[in-house]
Amino acid sequence: VADGEGGVMDLAVMPGGMFLATLDFWNLSVINLANGEHIRYEEHLDDVDVDQDGVDPTAGFSPDGRYLTFAADRMLGVWEMAGFLERGRSPEYNDPNGGWTRGPYPGLRKYQQPKRILAHSFTTDSRFLVTVNGDNQLRLLSPETGELARTIPLSIRKARRLVLLPDGKSFVAGANNGALELGSLEMTEGERA
Image 1 (tube, rainbow, N blue to C red):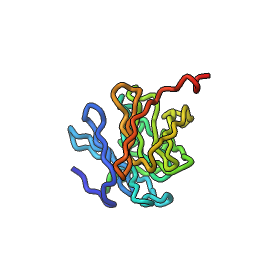
Image 2: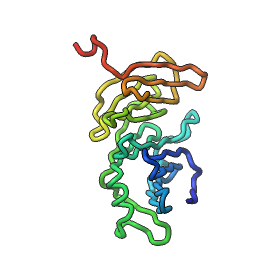
Image 3: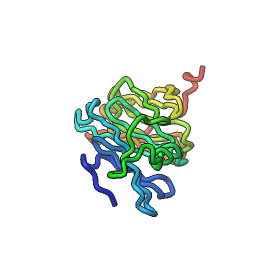
C-alpha cells in the first residue's frame, strides 16, 4: 500500500476502518484503505529522543474518529482528522513528486508533557486523551486544549501499555515485567470535595 523510509513504529486504524495511520521516525501518514490515497506529513521527530528505553512513538485515533494523535518522547500531537485530510489534499502544500505535505501545520496542536509518554488512548466518549507517563502516572487531558483534567498515580512501575475498557470508566495498565493494574478513571469522593 505504501513505502516507508524510517521503519514503521506504530499503526492505528480509525474506528469504522476507513483510514490507517502509520508513524515512523520522520512521518505521520494516513492511508485511505478504500482507495489507497496516501497523505504523508513530514513531522521530524529528531528533536525528541524517540529511542530512550526502547519506547517507540505511538499513534492513535479517537473512538469518534474526530482526532488523530501521535506521541513521541514528551510531545503529544493532536490533529482533527478533517483538517489533516483537507491540508494533505491541498495542492498548495503537496509536493507532486512524493505526496509530502510540509509545514506549517495549522490545526496541529502539540502538548509537552512533564515526563516521557509511554502510551496513550482516548476515553470511549473521546472527551479525554489519557497518557501513561514515565513518572508512573496517568494523565487525562482535553484533546482540544491540552488542559490537565486529572492525574491518577499507578501502583505498578514502568507501565508501557494502556487499554481503556468499554465501560468508559476503567483502565488496565501493563508493564514489561508482566505486572497489570486495573483502575478507575472516575474521581473518588475525596477528589470531588
